[in-house]
Picture 1 (cartoon, one colour):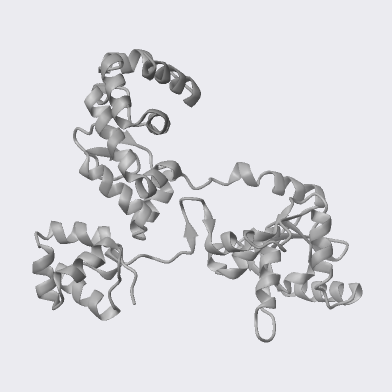
Picture 2 (cartoon, helix red, strand yellow):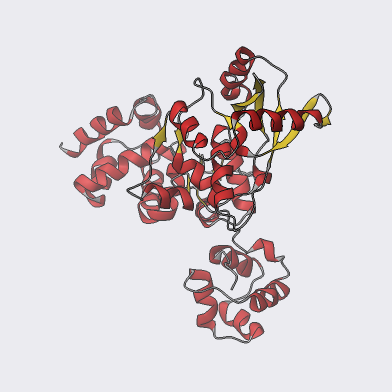
Length: 369
């Protein structure tokens, strides 16, 4: 069975100017089957997907949902969510507690450990100016200045282990022992992963820094400075490429309403506004589509979208949703139409407001007039 993005299938079918009935006939199934595929009620077999792609002249990657084990609406992997629901899991461990945990897993004496590290250091792999060795993860120690360990994160990495996702762990040598400078969570995850193997252990590649403890601490502190985090734009482009439903839903929603997504390569000539594909907007488009759709229609009816200042902001959507909850959509529309209409009003009164609470208070007073 192949998981496909039904919305993407619908978009491709319509672009090919085919009805559900016509596609069903070509495929040799009932029209209701195509409807079930597009609505997400069922998924086709691999054989049917291949035939669909041949009929629509697309590649399988264009409609298949890539399973990456991560929920972008709450920024947690499936494993992490499952683990955090368990009552007997230690959530956070201090560096000292983490070191004690690893110590309980070690099988070598201190002398044997130092000998193994010494042997590994005699035969390193060198790439450019970097030196790598292969060791048992249990040989790596956690210094007292390291970060706290979030066990759900470690267990999540171990449960969906893929070494290609991560840079090598960075270690330094102090008194013949290996200490982690960067990658403590991956050390724990690797130990957990090995415990799940039926036999033997898998050793890990680590980068050995030629530095003192003080220099290693600087490496640790500079992580957040030197690494560029994934932006919402980065996530959007990757999500669209992987056919993830939450991203395709947002793309389809905006295209239907002539809204420009900031990360979208296809630039609209004259959009009514722009939307940044933040996690909150993804949640609205996926779980609260009717509210989001009504809000866009209301913003257009009020003339706010005629302003040169973008009116399709998360703050506007958030406050409108709160007003609907207290007064209902009809009352909100009636009062805003009466007291808050026009692009000039939006630019001079609404746009300068910089907090959700201030905007809610302003519009809520209009509801009570």
